Amino acid sequence: MLVTWNGGSIVDSQHFVAEIVGRYKLGRRGYPVIVLTTDTSILTAWTNDYEYDTVFERRIEALGEEKDVFLEFQLVVIQKVLF
Image 1 (cartoon, rainbow, N blue to C red):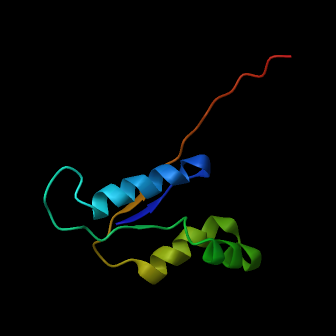
Image 2: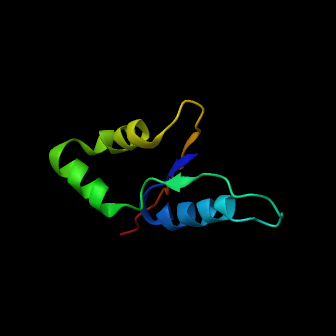
Image 3: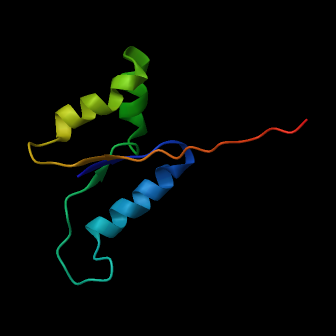
């Protein structure tokens, strides 16, 4: 499983993956899961040379296998600014 999140919710993705790799209330084997947003060297190197929109596509190409699951979570906050 390959996981991404956006913004401040990246920490949530790390916690989610830790629960999947760990046991999460059950005595079971760990599942192979990786967060694609935690390797800042790859994120910045790729987006320096190419468009940010393709950074996860490239990582999936490099790390993904045929039956893998890709989860992308996005937190959308609607704010009303009062002046």
